[in-house]
Length: 141
Image 1 (cartoon, rainbow, N blue to C red):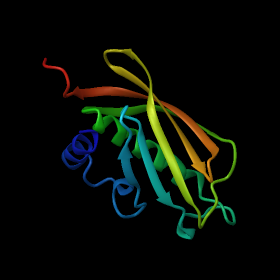
Image 2: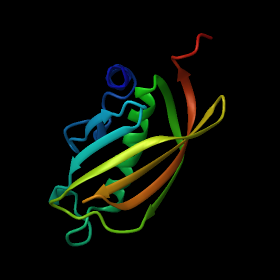
Image 3: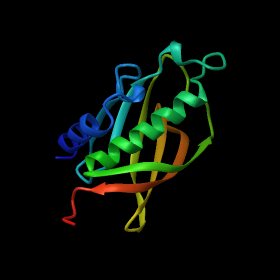
């Protein structure tokens, strides 16, 4: 259900986003409780400092994954704040995993979401974001 919702809304509202294309090749799935899990290869073409993925690429992956997470939950929303803590570098030539989940719903219009990026089961990056609701397809208004 989550994946089907995500694909429908991605194609309807976000079809030309560079981070939703083959540029990153983010492989998305959803757990039974609705958490998004994305796998991506850390290709050298995304390198900033030697042997490390550029922080801007990481920020784009996080923002895109969070948006796709909301689409999976049948929610269309825009990013209004994104905080990222880069605790350790994401290394090139290794697969990385991003996990995204709800933190809380602040009120009817704002969703707080968290994510973390891992390599070799080590948490490297954490983030939280606020998204402003555009459309909740779960509600009948």
